[in-house]
Structure formats: C-alpha cells, structure tokens
Image (cartoon, rainbow, N blue to C red; front, side, top):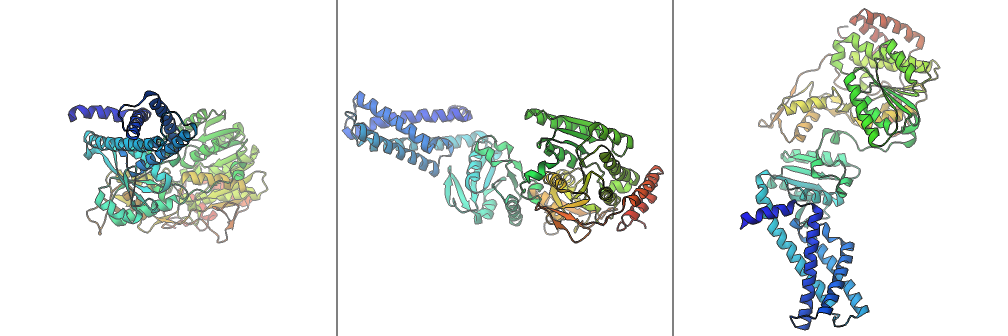
Length: 633
C-alpha cells in the first residue's frame, strides 16, 4: 500500500504552496459542513436534519470562519509541521468564529436554529480540523523522510530570537532537503516550547544540542544592530565547544518575511561578517555634497576600492560618471556592471569608460581635458607591497607620477575637489609602496598649500576585506586546497574594514575637506593575522591542526616577514588627531613640504625613473620621507 501512496503524497507535497493552502481550505469547508450536521444531530438528538436550518447554519458558520481566518490567519502554518503553536492558532480562530456566531444568532434569531448551536458548532469544528491536521502531519512526515532519505537531508539548527527566528524556521520547513531539528532562543522567550512543532531550547543548551544533535549547519537569525558581536560570540562558543559546524546567515531577514528569499539564498558566514562593524548611517549632506549633480571621475575604477566607489556614486545622482583604468578587463567589468545596474533602475546616468594611464602625461591630460570633472577620486595605485618592492621604478612611476599628473591636470581643468585614496602603509613606511603613497599625500598637501583653487585632500585607511591582493582571498584559496594556511608572522596585526564601508567613508571625508587635510578612518581594533586565519578555517567547518589538536584539518604555518613588510601598521604620524562631524573620521596633522621644494625633487625623481635607477629612487623617497629607511641602507 505504501508503494502506492508514497508517489501520490510526494506529488501533493510538491504542489505550489498556494495550491496546497487551497486544498486545506477545501478540507476545512467540508469539515465545517459536517460539523453543522453533527451539531444539529447532538442538539436535537436526531440523525436526520431539516434542510433549511442546516443550510442557514452552514452559510453563517462558513462566513464566521472566513472572518476569523482573516483576523487570526491560521493558514500561514505548514500542515506537515503542525504542533502546539499551530493548534493554539486554530483554537483562537475557532473562538473568534464562536463569538461571531453567537452574536449573529442572538440578533437575527433564524427559525429552527437553536442558539446553543453557535457554541456547539465551533467546538466540533475545532475538534475535526485539529484532528485532521495532526493526522495529516503524522502521515506526511514519515513519507517525506522515507522519500528523501535521512542520510541526504542536512540537519539544521536555528539560533535566534523574535520574528527573524520564526521566519527562518518557516523558510527551512519549506525546504525538502533540510531537516530542522530545533531552535535555540537566546532571549529565553520561547524556551522549552514548540514553534511549528519544532522544539525550542534555551541559550545555555546550545553546546549540548550541538554535541548530541548531529548538527550539519547552524542558521543564524538575528536582526538589528550588534549583529557582528552576536556572530563573533557564537563562533567563539562553537570553537570552545569543539564542534565544527557550518554557520549561515541571510542577506536580509525582511526578504524572508515576504517570501522573497528562499533557504538557497542563505549564505555561509564570512570573515567580513565578523571583522567588519555594524554600519553607521551616512550623513546625507556629506555623502552627496561632491557627487549629486556633478561630473565625477574615478581613477583606478577597476580596482577593489575604485569599483566600490563607482557603485556607490551611481546611487548618488551625479550628472556624469567617468571610469578610468589602464586595465582593459577590469574597466570593462565595472562598466558593464554599472550599465546593467542603471538599466535595471531605469536611470539615464551617462557613464563613460576611459582606458587611460594617469602616469602617462599625454594620457592623463587627454583624460582630464575630455571629462572636465568636478570631483576626482584618485584610487589608481599599485598596492601590493612585495611586488612594488621588487619593481621599484614601475611602482614609483604609477603611484607618485600618476598622482602628480592627476593633481595638476585637475587644477588645469577647474576641478573643485580632488580626493586621494591613501593607506596606513604611508605611516612610518618600511616599503617602497608605503613611502610612495606618503609622497602622494605630500603632493596633494603641497598643492593645497600653494593656494590652488582645487580642494585637495587625502583619506588614509587600512586593509579592506576581500580586496585584490589581500590575505582573505589567499587564505580562502589555501583552505580550499587543503592547506596549509601561511602567515608571515604569528604576531602580525592589521587593521581591517569592509570595502563598502571604506568607500562610503572616503566619499564623506572628501566632502569635509577645505584643502590639505589628511583624513584617517576609524578602523577599529587591529586584528592578529593568525587569528584571522584560524577564524576562516573554522568558518569553513574545519579544525586547525596544531599541538593541541594534532588530528585537525588545516595547519597554520609561519613563513617569515617579506621585504618591506611591517609587523604592525599605524594610521597616524602625529599624535593629535582632531574629530570631525563624522564619528568614524578624524583629521590628522601631518608635516608638509613647500611646493617649490617638492617640485624640484619631483624633477629628480622623473630622471631616476627614466634611468630605471631603483637605488636612486629609494634614496629620493628617503629624502622626501625621512622615516622611510631603504633596505640595505
């Protein structure tokens, strides 16, 4: 018999949710009619009921149930997960139905319909539909598990509270490939109860549930501020419990509430969810001041920061966006992405992609003359420390000469605001890359001090998570390859920020500039790179192999500092930063050079570039940035 019923029940379960809900409603209508007959039979003591009173009661009862269903909404529950909460909702709906029936029969007094029927019918109706649902759930669940195979269903635990937790539980229940074993409620509000037939445990039971429940994945349902703190705390508890488990989060809990997102959209928790911070709402005046209604140029638009700047600028209504990059592929990619985005939002924003190398005088002059930007975000730079250390001439030409050309051409075409994207490696630099970026800062400071009409400023920040050349994609690749994960030094620390937050703060910092400022972004606390590696391994559901856990999966190996690398990074040269109107942006006070003096050294620097004189370039960098000590000096 089961061989015959299983395919039929599977087809029933596979029907669209709306169709299944309609079938449940039809069953309830039949139950309501049967309850009307049963109520008359019990009240009058006869099996044969008069037709007219019976029809009157059926119409009134169905109308009352429809009203109650609109108020209480009992059809939101999933039948195969019927539990105490679902039965309670049915009871509330039947109680509302009873009140409506009592009022109607008391006021209209239909002939041959006893008023006690208004109480008896809802009670019988509740017994019928509750029994049907419990029986259906008991029949459906084993069939589902038999058809899917328990070995192929992922056992899922939900951790969360309030509406997000309930919404996520409902979303998981709709997925045939997942088995929701329970919910952990840190608030304690629903502890030791059932939601949709699923047990809810208190926060203190998490470790025991993980050890005893064979959990494959943990879905985190937490909305509002403080999400990253919750995630960090949860990951630390999982680590201490010694239970490697995949953790997933949803991009937007609001979407789940409106059935816009399925469980397939739940993504694995990423390192940015832990190291990043909860965002601060942008200042509307600052975020749009240099962009709204203006022609905006982004150099290095194909890079990690440049492309994110471009994405955010598109949403701020510039009159035109000019994307410049010397990489054909990366320029094409961001141009195509932004054009698709504007078409999707039916925007008429003109976007111009310019293949240009700002380190080339002719190229740079052509770019600025053709675009005449009001605002420039200069993000074009080589940022990979070991590569620039091994290619001094190319690095200095791209970073220093590129900035010099862009700054001077911006002034020539009447650009109002020029924002240099800088780095924490410019502070007391130990590398050519860091020293070259400090010289870039000196250029914009000197141009501002010379009385130029253009407002020049620089924005300095640390590492951005997921950028090209950063440790995050390198660690991810090493983990996927089975390890080991390599770190240069176990005690090395770095500041980290998510790319979207960095870009948003760069835009706002540039809007505050009066000329010559070096703005510093609040990067939070420095992060030990070895801790970052450990966290990424554990986020992958694996264990670190070390002396304490020789049977772990991935080893973390120290390979030593590379030329030009620092053990610790800094954001400030001076020690007197000034607050600004934005809580995560401060203004630094840095030493400056006179433009005439700097211009003379720039001429020498160009000569050394032409001669491909790496040693001479290092010497000139030291002359401009005394705290930089060239290797071998």
